[in-house]
Length: 483
Image (cartoon, rainbow, N blue to C red; front, top):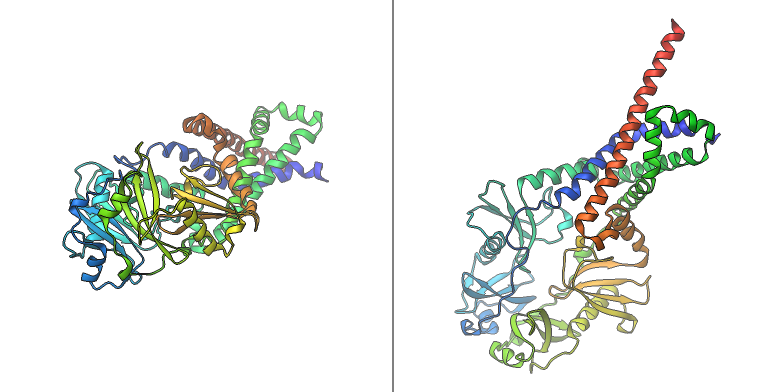
C-alpha cells in the first residue's frame, strides 16, 4: 500500500507546499544577507562617564522634598545638556521625572530631551530631528522581539529615513531602522512568519505548524522513495534528467530540509505559550526620608573600587543599599552594593540581589539555588533575542532545573527557562540558524545557511518543473486516447 502510493503522496504534498516553501526559502536566504547591512549609526552603546561631583549641588533627598515627592521606585544620575539630573521613577508615572542636581528644579521635558540627546549621540552625525513620538506598545515596525517599552521613536532628516528607538530608562538604543531595512523586515515578516495572518490571532501559528510538519513529512517520503523503492524503479527514473537531479540534490540536502522544517514547526508551536516576562519587576516604593545620599562620602568610600559612573537604590530583604556602577582599574564596568546607612560594602551584592529577586518571582528558597552566575554575552540558551546585558543567571535544583535571568539594573526578569525548553531553543538555534558554526564566525555561518537554503530552493523548483511536465504528459495521453 505504502510503496504503491508513496510517489502520489510525495507529489501532491510537494505541490500543495510549493508556494509556502518558496516563500520561506527566499526570505530565509535574504535574512543573513540583510543582517549584514544594518542602518549606519556611530555607536551601539553609550560610554559610561564618571560623575563630576563638583556639579552636584543639591542632595537627592532635598531635590525630592523640594518637588513634594514623598516616595520613589528608583533613581539614576544622568547628564542632560551638560547639567546633572536625578532621573526619578515614580509609581504613578510611566516616564521618569528629571530634577536638576544643581538647583532642584523640575525639567518638564526632561525625558523627551534626554531621548533626543541619546539618539543624536548614537547616530553620530549632524542630521536634524524630523519628529519624535512615544510608543507604549509594539507595532508593525517595532515588534515584540525588541522587548523595551515605552520607547521614544526619534526620526531624523536623512535620505535613508533613519529612526532610532530609545529606552531612556537604561539609556539604550532598542532598535535602529531605516527605509531599506523596514522594507526587508516587512517582506521577511510576511513571507517567513506569515505576518499577513496576524489579524487571525493564533490561527497564524496553526498554519505555520501545520505547513512545517507537512513539509517535514514530504521530505521523509522523499527519503523513503530514495532508500526503499526498487533499484529497477530508480534506474527508470534516472533516465529522466530532471528526476535524477531532483532526487540526488534532495537526498544530499535532506538533513537540512528536516532540520529547517522540524525546528520551524517546534518554534512556531512554542509561540502558543504566552510570554509574560514583562510582568515580572521588583521595584518597591522607597520613602524619600531615607534617601540621604551624600555623594561625596560615597565616592570617598569607593576609592578602592574605581570611578563611579552612576548610582541607584535597591531593596534586599527590606534592607536598602546603594547600587553603585563604576569603572574598574582596567576600565571594565562593574557594580557594587553598599548599605545606605554607613556605606559598608555588601560582598557578592549583585548575586545576592539577583537571587533575592529570583526567589520573589519563583517562590523558591535560597537553599534551593545551585548556581548564581553573571552573564556578560549572548550565548547558548541566553541568546541575542533576550536583549538585556549584563544579567545574572539564578538556577534552582527543582522545577526541571528552572533558571531565572535577572537584569539587576532594573529589577526585571529577562528570561525564565527550564530543561524542557531546551529542545526548542537549541533546535531553532542549531538546525534553523546554524549557530553550531559560530566558532568559524558569522560570515561562515551565513554562507552555510544560504547554501543550504539555496539547495532546498533548487530541489523545490525542479520538483515544480517535474509536476508541470507530469500534468502536460497526462493531458497529452488523455487527448491521444480520445482521438
